[in-house]
Amino acid sequence: MSNSNYQMDLGIKETERLKIAQGLSKLLADSYSVYLKTHNFHWNVTGPMFQTLHLMFEAQYTELAIAVDLIAERIRSLGSFAPGSYSDFAKLTSIKDAVGQPHAKDMIAHLVQDHETVVRTARSLFPIAESSSDQVTIDLLTQRMQVHEKTCWMLRSLLAE
Picture (cartoon, helix red, strand yellow):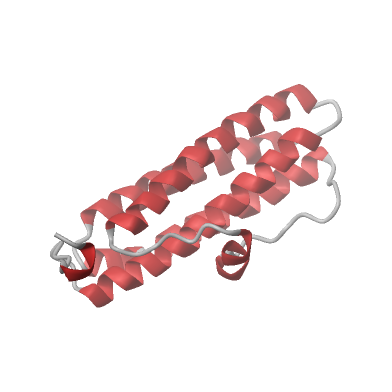
């Protein structure tokens, strides 16, 4: 059976599937942008916290690399194409690039803000996912929020005096 002749019926209206996929595309763009920034900081961190941050950033970008795949695959499962280029992500993301090479504590502060942004992006998708009874997306959003909120806590702890 050809895909072009097959009507998808997941129990979610097509218009709702498209809205969810659009929202997930923003979540993907935000997540990928945080992945890229975290990887950059991993490479370029300096100072007395180097070892701690170098290892922490590596664990964080590794987790994000898996996450972006899960988000993109959910978009595909809903029948949409996932964005996958820097230009696509630049149009969709709410994450701001870091200018230059920030000091270690500034890197941490950037990432706290960025992870909070991802949490807000994920949280904004709940109304359409809930009204569509899209438990799979709800579960994905819940898992992503849990990781990002925990990451914020850990990063904020490093900023405490």
